[in-house]
Amino acid sequence: MALYEGVYEQTEQAQVRFIGMHTEDSMYDLGLLFSNQFFGKTMVINMQSGKSVLVDAEDLRNLEWLKETFSLRSLAEAERLAHFLEDHIPSLPWKPEY
Image (tube, rainbow, N blue to C red; front, side):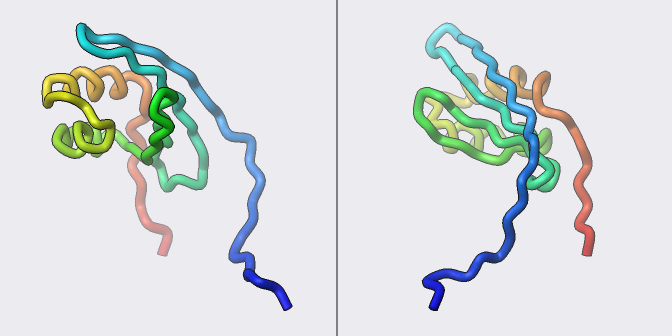
């Protein structure tokens, strides 16, 4: 008897982009993973902390969320990161299929 039941398995060639930025206070090494599995969002991986989160252009407008998610020191730092990511994360509208 199986100890688990698979729900789905799909293989895909995903696009990954590595970018770095610095501010007066911090350095960011980020991986951006683009996949059809993320419902129009981009997986942003902080290479230094190992944290990852799915982000779209709408999420970047929520500076409090960005500050908390990436453990940033200030809203100003969150705003700098948001502006940087806006240039690298596509703004694709996502609509549910069902």
